[in-house]
Amino acid sequence: MKIIKKLVTFLILAFIFWSCSGLPKNNPKLTKEEPVVIANDSLEYKIIIIDIGFNNYLNSIAQPKGFYNQNYLEARNRAWVISWNLRAQNPSRFNQNIYENIIDYQPNIDYGYDVNYKLFNYFLFAQQKYNINLGGGFRTNRIN
Image 1 (cartoon, rainbow, N blue to C red):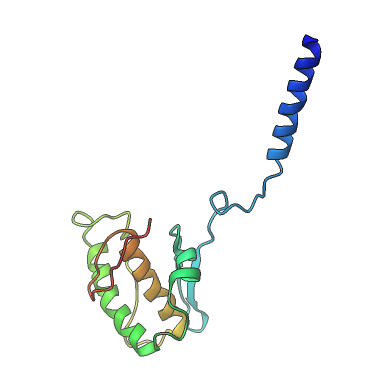
Image 2 (image 1 turned 135 degrees about the horizontal axis):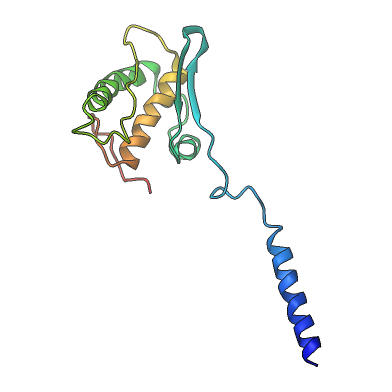
């Protein structure tokens, strides 16, 4: 009788272990988030953003492409790049884990809509995620 109980217990545990091993592997908490590439190949301009949550923000929270016109995006990006770069150049005053790199964004270059759209949305995302204010009154509820 004890052997049968042990055998049944073993089989139940084996079945539970086997069934749990078949869980989907595409669980978002288990998969590595891909970086977002902001690029304009004709200008040889590229920014790679590796910030957990930005892909989700860009695909589900950000306003859709076309919501803002390119002139508006460029104006916001110019202002936010200046603020970002000042902070990146002052690591003793600002968290260098947030402001790791200076962004080379020249106001006289047309980077195109896609570059400006993604950069603009990254600034919105960063302001929310890190509870920072780059100016312009765009910081809203913090992203967890």
